[in-house]
Length: 139
Image 1 (cartoon, rainbow, N blue to C red):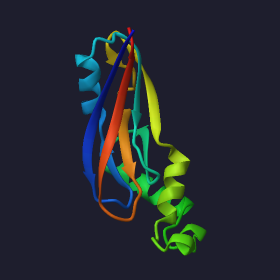
Image 2: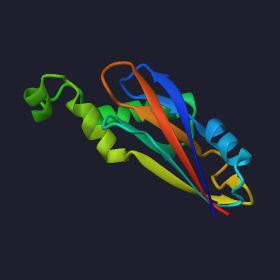
Image 3: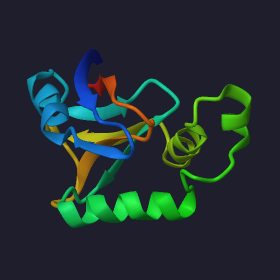
């Protein structure tokens, strides 16, 4: 059983900034000894999330629009009143999506659909330097 950890660093602009990390994750899997197992992608912090989507400009615009509809920035969130940092919407959006994603590794490759990319979304209300943890486990 092999266990490999690596990190990906990204700089974001915040405000629902979407980053495709598929290539970096697949590169790490391809150089690992794991041929059958699982890869977990995780972003530490409470204002960012990891998911999959078709990473293309229209979908990115749609993601931003749906998050604004579901969890509007301008609402009077209790978190903002408590902490005064105006990012209550960021925490809520990240909570809806979640901080990590696990995908199977089959024959040394990440198992995903043709139009399914791995993305990190930074919901915070300011630019951030994000670390993305990639954990590869298997045989």
